Image (cartoon, rainbow, N blue to C red; front, side, top):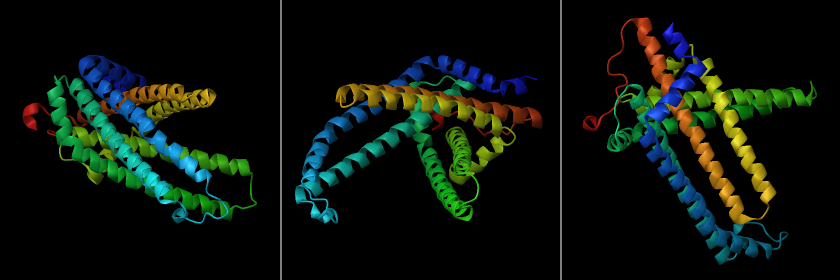
Length: 311
């Protein structure tokens, strides 16, 4: 049946490509803004922090390691450099987060509109972002807390397991098992995070735990396919990151060449992230479509794209 074929991984990827091409001008606007924003942040961060880092390293080299006990052993100028660097890094982190949040909402909203054959202008998209950023932000905070909690629990169980199995079994087997469990947890949380974010953007008045629970309902019976998609994109992103790491290592201290490589990797990872948002938006709609066909009728008002007059 059509609903079964459309939910295959190849079917979802195909729909995502068609949706991307259908949204050509809007996609170009989104990507251009994100590329330039993140590139300027990377370049600006390098230019602004470089003098402070060089000054900090120079002053630190004069400190006797044997006499150093705390930050109070630094002189006033060094402490000032450290504070400035912390403020700059925090500011860059906040701006990067805001840019990526806009990126996710804009991509999901434009893809959702394209799937439902709605014409979404740049103004409509910006209005959608304004209407949905709070819900997306709240869901992101909840998923961050859940991820941190899972990581802490995993670390505790890993430590307890190491103590209880000390001297038993192969060390390599223990490491391999731990890595495998960690990867499974990462993929599971990533899928839940991505679908919860899509729900927060597409559905009305749905954020936080409500969006997470709704994402669980959508993924019921289809989580394996969603995880397979996440594994695919994780491999691609890892390849891009490792390629950048190797090239930067080969360039040594050639600062500007390394900067060009880092910016290129940012662009590549943004493209991967963009298509990932599109894929999970398509997956969301296809799951809803199957659910409606199985029930014989839809649930009205669940995921109607916003037009400019609805905001």
